[in-house]
Length: 178
Image (cartoon, rainbow, N blue to C red; front, side):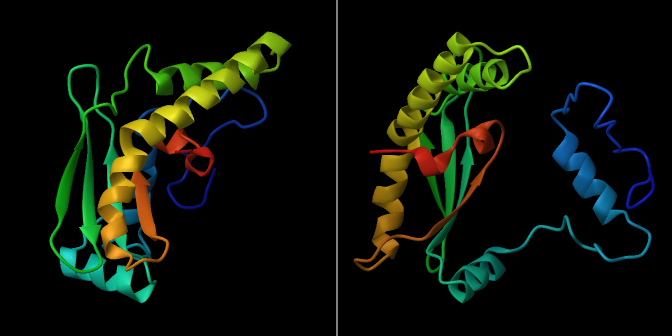
């Protein structure tokens, strides 16, 4: 209890199983933005393209890439804000979430492998799902993103800033492979 937001976001860490609601990130950001002391005033206000591009150039990044998964009927999308140039939208037809998708299998198997009653089979299933989801991430987004953002790098390694949304933040991007 206490702190920014009072008890509305408090989680009983030691006594109960933790269930994180889908809107937790939004709720946390809203509490920060509505904080009485004004430290986070304007925190949720969107930045314009020129501001984003200036920040990218300042930190020597090539592009800001928002990755949004689709669902079984809608393809995923990447919105690419290059450090210089026009914003691009890249359709990612294979980046689909939902029941039975590689990301769904990974999330379910991770929970099973890291629970208090996990078995060797659960851990093997999770490792297989990890291989599948990293292969899937490269196939459905990585290769296309590298091809597009690589144009901004002038022959050196590309430096994109990835902003995965939905369930995509759980995909271990560092484990992705071509």
